[in-house]
Length: 555
Ligand code: N01
Image (tube, rainbow, N blue to C red):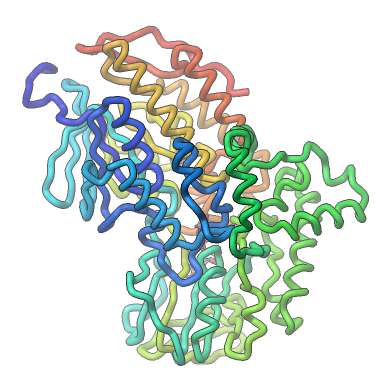
């Protein structure tokens, strides 16, 4: 009964998530004339920047790059105060965008999507929320973020602790005062590396509980230089265009040179110069740093030497050096005073490999290993990561054709076409989904590319009176294989990282982001669109199917 008015969707598009992707989707699709609603679990918009309010939280992509490019008026008028924007400023920016473009009226907060089922007869999704809504939409877009399901550690006795427990990703909205308190931070990834120097300034005693050391380089953050701001704003269009063509989505050229074509002195000079600039600039010094283990070892050695230089106590410095994975196969951190924090008398590194946590007690943590001890604590900060990339998608009971669930389909790891579309799940899109460049890029660039691609698809369907689109199983298999082959040729599988799903017990060990780079990925997507949406099945009313163009190779 496809034309039953009760079953016709009241919305063209339901977007799940009011973070950077959801905000952009609402603006773009609404301006194209689609009826759009955004549903958000949080109490307000902002996604990552709504939840992660811990002291020191800031983006480690530069402000002038980590911002929307789709409104020149917006990018010219907004003023960032620092080179790397702190969380409150990014949140204020996103609130400003929502107000400036009148987006809030189509957003519903404190509402979590629980189930979504494809209704084949009506070519629509039926979506339920924890607020008791039943929403019907033609297209369902999951803009749920790659790092939005916090993972709390399974440590014996955690529930017994009488002090305060603060997961970095669920930080209170009011500032937490650690003055004079005894605090432990568990976890030394990007969140831990950011929170440690801030809490170190206040706490009476700070214990940093490290299981795996991070590679971190300085941000050299500071007030944004007005001359830099003027220059970037004068050349925004070219810079954005360049960022879209590179591998990492940043506005600088990646050098097409092997590290082995440089002398040791030349390498050192190149690394030094890039280290002085700060951030991810080091990554693109040579083109084989992430494909050749020996090349990687050279840059890893460089960063380890820098870590040792920054820490006064040689033993502590050495314990902070990572040795068991290649640089960047776990996300490199960008810090502001992380290693220097260990030079303070109130900060102590606890190496959990030597003295693992036995249990949390009412008053602290008991450590075992070769130096058993008790840490008396008033507060615990858990910087222990996320169920990345698939967690938020699998948290919803998503059912495609014939009631098949996405969880079932992904039992051995995610299978997608381009990270965006899903065989058996018509009209479902996942922004920066698994097997798209997403977290291996300046995610702003990847989000904008996916939003534009979805807009192109939706307009194409509408203009031709079509009602659904989904990839063929063959196209999806081919993409999964292409993604796997590139991943296997990289160094990423050598680390037990969240990129590999290795931080969540029982999660399939599969490389989640696409390593081909945003430029290459964009060109593949453009070819698919130009080639009559190769690899997709497009259907009209009453199931009429258009001829499918095979996906072909993804060179
Ligand atoms: O999480 P992580 P994160 N006992 O998974 C440790 C983005 N981000 O929130 O490596 C003891 O990187 C775990 O140890 P190990 C960015 O993409 C961006 O810091 O599993 N330790 C690890 O040290 C980033 O990569 C920004 O051995 C335990 C840490 O917890 C991603 O988010 C800022 C443990 C988790 O590190 C995630 O970063 C922040 C246990 N039971 C985040 N369980 C910016 O843009 C886990 N650990 C700045």
